[in-house]
Amino acid sequence: MSLNVLAFTFGIMGNIISFIVFLAPVPTFVRICKKKSIEGFQSLPYVSALFSAMLWIYYAVQKDGSGFLLITINSVGCFIETIYIILFITYANKKARISTLKVLGLLNFLGFAGIILVCQLLTKGSNREKVLGGICVGFSVCVFAAPLSIMRVVIRTKSVEFMPFSLSLFLTLSAITWLFYGLAIKDFYVALPNILGAFLGAVQMILYVIYKYYKAPKTDDIEKPKTVSDHSIDMVKLASTPASRDLTVYPQTDGGAVESQMEKKVANQIQT
Image (cartoon, rainbow, N blue to C red):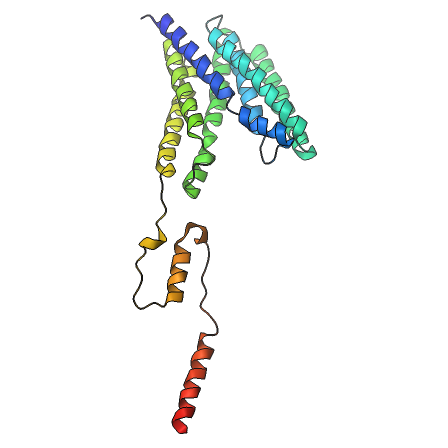
């Protein structure tokens, strides 16, 4: 099988898988539309995804037709991310709306316009492709590194609630597919960031498997100390539950008073 056929095959697969990834936030925006509120969701992932798609389209245009499959999927991505951003702005409160518009203006308009001006005025031919490719790689690495914060939350909380396995799987498949596409067309700038993407995606899936089946120690399995009272045993069980790891159990302050009263009572009985 020739490299052209391999490149086309991986490019088509990359388009299909990336399209699924672009549609992943749909349930989030269905929820936003139903509740007419963005709740705690942030717009930065969608603004960043739009900027990344715009960069890759501009980069693919410099390749004289060989980047057609990059243009198709990123054009679809631009359309989908724009819809997400419009919905977010529609249902956001005033503070979130202004913040989103600021980032959108600085990154997607001024930032992108600045990159085009620098590349068009200061670079030519293959040098322009190299400069723009380096910018695309740098931004893609930042985007792929974003899930590190989610992985830290998973490790800290021992919960995979905010890291769905299906999304991690498709992100990994997408990165692997575009990695092979980049290798097939001998494009270093396409292949390089997807090496990191594939690695981080694999790590996410491993963490999911580990913490999905993580079991906290059962309180019934804790041996009951023979010399400890029932009340103290309850405190031991309480301290062993995950929800009470940060609790501090203080000794009772009235224990000494009770013991002193008992001693006085015994002394009075002896004297009588």
